[in-house]
Image 1: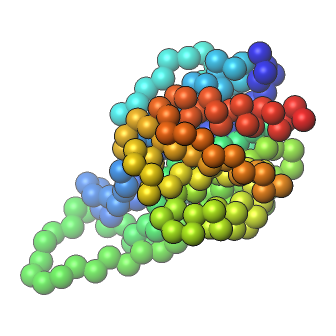
Image 2: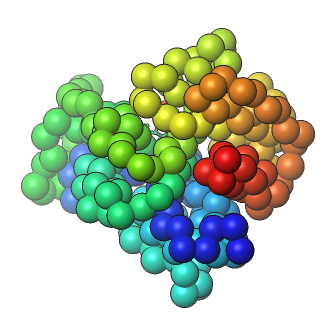
Length: 217
Ligand code: C5P
């Protein structure tokens, strides 16, 4: 199998950023794309570490070690613990860019008037993995609504990636929520390949074929 002996790290799902013990900031990522990438990698022979934010998804596979995390900071820490041992890393998680600066210890009481919650930046996991890169083939995702190709190429270079998967929200059925996706794969030589609208399992296989052709090149 093409990924025999390879170790793969994949991030998936949203992150939840605590406001108080019962509330959080989050997003609508289902985790499907990351889980499909993990299942595909395992069926291609890889040993997979799947770091997932809160999702309803499950996976039963001896080759997949599922590590569940809640916040971006936890996802960051967990990725760094495993990164140096992996050959390929794919960041498919929808990481919250911001978190509440102060987390209330007790459930916040409602008061008259507006509430302001101050937010601070979360670490960019993919950027940090790009900085720490030695042998890893590193892949990111980009979800863009305008100047898609230019923005994706910018991310590829800024984050020191080997490839980026662009999904455009302009395409019906692409991106969050659904079970279909339409992607463009861009590698660091700016070689660009656009795919048709497909199911997420099919998209995952297309992505793996592109990665495999480059790591064995
Ligand atoms: O910069 P932007 O958030 O659009 O980049 C998206 C890519 O970066 C995705 O691969 C996502 O998983 C990753 N990312 C990350 N940590 C963040 C923000 C984004 O790993 N804090």
